[in-house]
Image 1 (cartoon, helix red, strand yellow):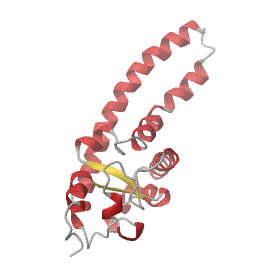
Image 2 (cartoon, rainbow, N blue to C red; image 1 turned 120 degrees about the vertical axis):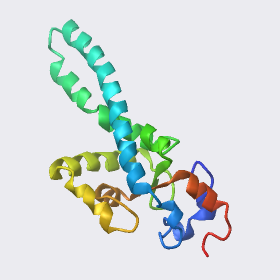
Image 3 (tube, one colour; image 1 turned 30 degrees about the vertical axis):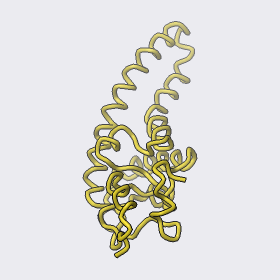
Image 4 (cartoon, rainbow, N blue to C red; image 1 turned 45 degrees about the vertical axis):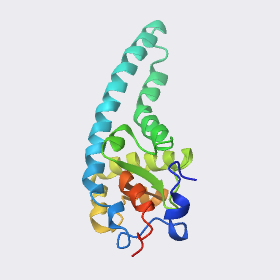
Length: 173
């Protein structure tokens, strides 16, 4: 079950709420998600800088023999950052926590490791392949979902609003 204990009482028919039934769950998600990603880029940059120092030492100690492995590991930093945090107990990266949004499975539960990995990998593949144009898809659907959200079966929702709505017995009316 969800870490906040509201999935059983909140989600009707094991699906995320429709924006018409609970618009608060999706209110402001688009701009919050965008700003959260910029915060995450800064955090990833700091992590990459620390890793760069460690990798440089390993590169020198191995006389350059570990260079291909180190470059591969360096490329995994953003993937690991997003996957580990999205599949963690918060279901959100550091930027997403700052802006009160979280990732949920379409069933309303926290995403597992594999689902977070798929969502993150699809994000980097689709954004890289389309020069970020694919992100415009959020403007054309009610849940404000991107292509990688749809393919991974996830949705970004407001965190505090969902908790408040879960405790409101009249959320359906």
